Length: 181
Image 1: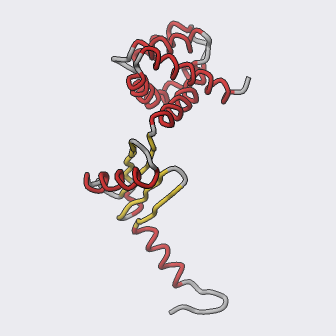
Image 2: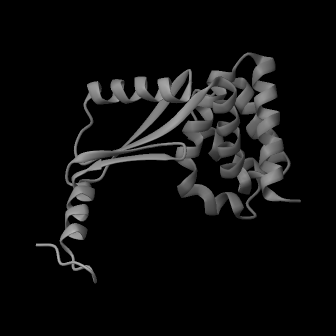
Image 3: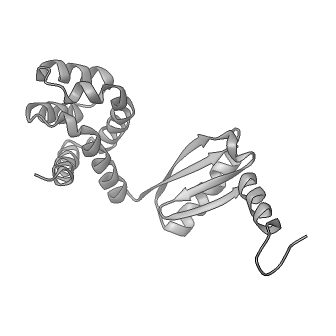
């Protein structure tokens, strides 16, 4: 069976079960917490270790999880799908965001992002996408020197100093037809 299809089915099941239990927000929060903790334990989850140990590890990774998410983890481990948990959780989060009108964005800055910048970008993103909510992931990358790079869906706004420097370099390069200087 296709791994993407499996992920979509489990994600849909989690979304439906969370809705039935009235724990959609809690399951989304727990899925984000588990997804961030999954990288170091990916190899362990694919290993032939007994399912009870895997379930115990997954439950420890998300303390304070809701009952719907705990039931979901038990289901995944019982059906031996823990190796695909990353894909399942990403699929679930995408479905949840779509259903709730949440847009994910990524802001790359050289230093610290000011709260005013985040508020303005959130307001502009809501205005242009019609989203109810915006989740902005802030990434620090000193290589861009200054300014910011903002990505929303398939759009990218590059207002970094590094891009401006590269643009200037290109403008001063030799062209076969003209020499700029």
